Every structure is written in structure tokens, then in C-alpha cells.
Image (cartoon, rainbow, N blue to C red):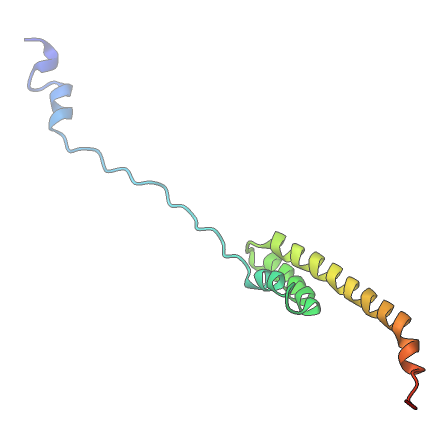
Length: 110
């Protein structure tokens, strides 16, 4: 009989030994949460632009401090809300410029 089949050989010991410990997958760190103020900043595009700017700036600060996700959302909220606010101020100024003098000098004796 060959030596690798003999009862005292290393091969027979490996067969009769306990199985190796089970393998478990490495632990995966969950993604950090998305900052809520960054999402609110984007939602406020449709509601109230100045508040969106403030929420976006606060979100950027919190993201840096808390190591959260959503920096792009917060930046987009600040930029879009800022552009909309500037656009609204320009439209309001142009309306006053063109229609303001007519309203102030309108005839009231009709």
C-alpha cells in the first residue's frame, strides 16, 4: 500500500481533522448619509430662492464638519438659487424702472 494511504500519514490526518473555520466576508462600512439641508436647498429652488441659498451654505458647512455626502447637491443649490435670486432682483428692478414712473404720475382725476 502506498504511504499516502497509510493510516498514520499526513493525508489521513488532514482528512480526519476538523474543517477549517468558515469564511466570512469582510465588514463593509455603510455610506455616510446625505445631508438633508442639501436636498432642501434644491427643493427651495421652486419655493423661495433666498432661503435656498442659506440652506445650501449651511449644508456645505455641515458636510465638511460631519463628513456626510451631498456636497454636489448643496453646491448646485447655492448656485441655482443664487442665479435665480439675481435674476428676480433684475426683473424687479427693470419693472420698477419701466413701469414705476407711469404708476407715480398716473392721472387720478378720471
